[in-house]
Image (cartoon, rainbow over the protein chains, first blue to last red):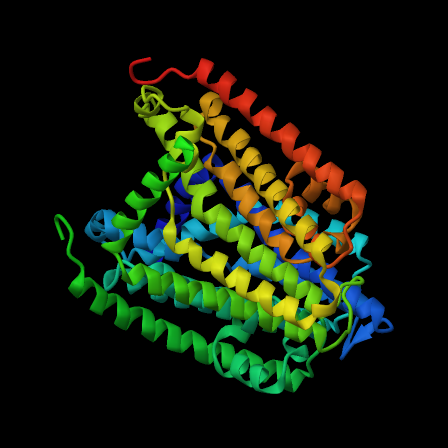
Length: 267
Length: 261
């Protein structure tokens, strides 16, 4: 455990330095991350205003709060591992990572966290600016804020592990872009990025709750908006923990199977 | 005429190259259908709560989605691949080979690579447009059709010139792929009528990154809401940007120092 902590500390130092070199790329990624929720925020604001100030259970101000919090949750939980991993396998770079005595997922987590630490302050400034501009308002009960933190952490972990597992499709096929796009399109729709899940048709809501998607982005947002009772919130956390266990098992099984089929110079 | 023959030759080469990877056709088809499907699902959700969106009826927004796919397909078919190749060849110095050829170098770099499977997006775009037209049949006359084609051409020229200007920046800065990614993010916003957005974003998407002229303006022409002012501005901007991009290209070439130049 102590060795792992030291490893992370060292990894943070190096990846922070590396990420600062990619400032421009990080900034450009951020434009997309802001623009997409902003577009849907604007669209739903117009829909809400034209139908008397609310749609379903959402008022105009709650739409604003929903998409701004969603933007932050998405920023905190997103990964780019699927593009990266395909490149590593194709170019055989993975072989170097395999020489190291630790699982390569640790350096990926450190990479991910350090890039977020650099971009998050800017995202928070943008979020505050948008909240003022669109008169966003939330009034979560105190306990909801307490539940939001673990639900966000669980969302990050589950999303990271699931996307890391999916990235390993690169071991079996060179055409991962179709798999990635399928995943992203489903994620877009079923994690509430186009519309709050509560506004989608009932069967879609059930699908989003059975599949992991709701627990990756939408759930923490719903919590912070104060839309759940304590009992519902606890059940949601339970679902997230269940997915965490599933994703840990998946990562291990798929990684072992993948390594067996991996063939590169030196592997 | 010889330019058309040249384009035909490049196109045939691309087709032959890609026919070795026929499965890519099905992969692109799958991806395009998926992306269109989610687009339509989003529209369905939004229009289940409202009849008009900022003054646009569902069939009109559907037409806009058609234009979005059509123009996106054109960008992916020929504009983007050529510009990415240009940036690469400037960095590697292989632009030398293009410059020694007896045809205009700007023309060659613009048509040298064709991603033929993106034709699927163009077909889907036409399909969606046709579906939208059927749903609003009585309102499309000769004037609308003519204005639509003119605005589509103007939008195409504007986008092409804009990409070329960005890509020629590589003569000075070498690494500019990231700037191209900004356009991709901004193009996403073109799915919806630009008039929905607040002022600053609308001006940004019209005059800084001209997404509006590629998607909203042609859709406006088709749905009979285009004003003469917009039409004149679009044509004028197309002409001005095209000449400007030519100037950029010439200045860039003078600045170019390749492997042997």
